[in-house]
Length: 275
Image: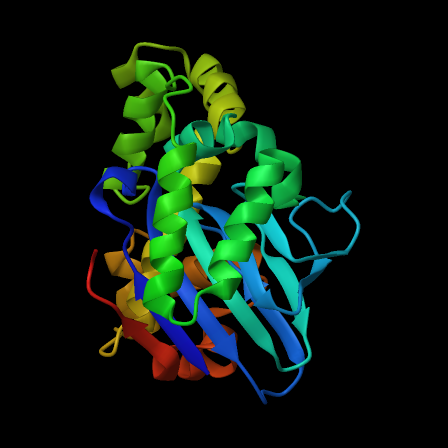
């Protein structure tokens, strides 16, 4: 197993938080959980396909993708694999959805779309350039080049919505939604409707995802706290609350995730210098 993380060059960082190159060979076949986060998922495979057997939108049938973009979601995506996976995953910000794909993140909410549908011929060029590169560094540089050409100012979220998103992100989901609406100067209902149209999640769902994402990140740390301490540090009422949220957002308990996915993730990760 190999996993290499890098940061795009500075002009792209408001649009793409990170690149992650991954390669898994000879693993036991199984199902991987694609967990909710504050970022849209953008994947280019370097071999094989991403075989989705369970999607956040239960109305979308299972599908296989060589390239994909997935919107924000609050339930896991289930990815079946035969022990082989090879590709690059980009963590796309909501602003990146507008600037690179030409639409607000809310239009992709809980769904998965082939990259060709969104980018047309540019998708083919991006895939060819990434697949013909021979090192992770070269692949990431190729991504930088294509994405820099794609990036245009295609409109911004309303200032109130952008501010509300930043408040939730900066607080790691700890801001009360009623208080957030009061700070914005809108009713809670109006904020909820406008926020969901822009981002694909309600403010309450976004707060849950951001709190979960923080817990997930802390649980992956080499010196992770115990679950009771993790619950307190991440703003859950107690360990039982943490476990309930994990079951809804990840499809399993933290203990199950630790046993099934964490060891291999930790063993594989390597970070490249920023470029």
